[in-house]
Length: 195
Ligand code: ADP
Ligand code: MG
Image 1: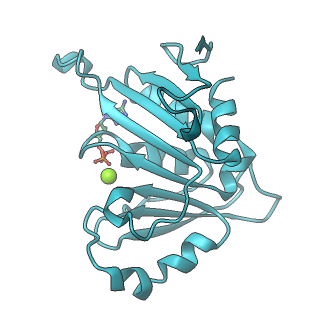
Image 2: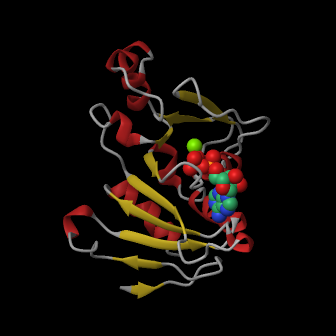
């Protein structure tokens, strides 16, 4: 285990052997003191070229900050204007024009899935979700556990939880964050976070 210096307030830690099970891949541990750190994390992730063709899941209770992270990431990737959330639609498409990760003039396609209300296998087919996951671009998935039977392999998993040690109202922005890599692409994302 090694401590890595970053621009965030608290230096995160990368475990090269995942706690208890190396087969699960390396884990990056971070800490967000407030939403400014969440934004810094998003901006750092957005510098990784591998992100442009990856599938990331976001886990955490309601209010943990999954959608907030997605919004910061979309902004960091160049999505402009009002950002709608997929509250009722399961998936919301976005197009990042002038995305720094893409060749000039080529927008990055981003799909933001939220399976919180997902409970119908037919919805997966009817909404063409299989095709979306198979197409190029970035897929960000909230509540993947609610579509576990259908989810394709993911590159990295981001877990967010409010810091239980910081319950006073002045610090309700504190979050513990864990990113686990599940593929070579996921490892590239971790490498960027660790710089
Ligand atoms: P989720 O999608 O996990 O249900 P949301 O992102 O919708 O959660 O809501 C998280 C709430 O917590 C937002 O109101 C956000 O402003 C707030 N918040 C406070 N601190 C943070 C932080 N460090 N990171 C993300 N969200 C934060
Ligand atoms: Mg959400």
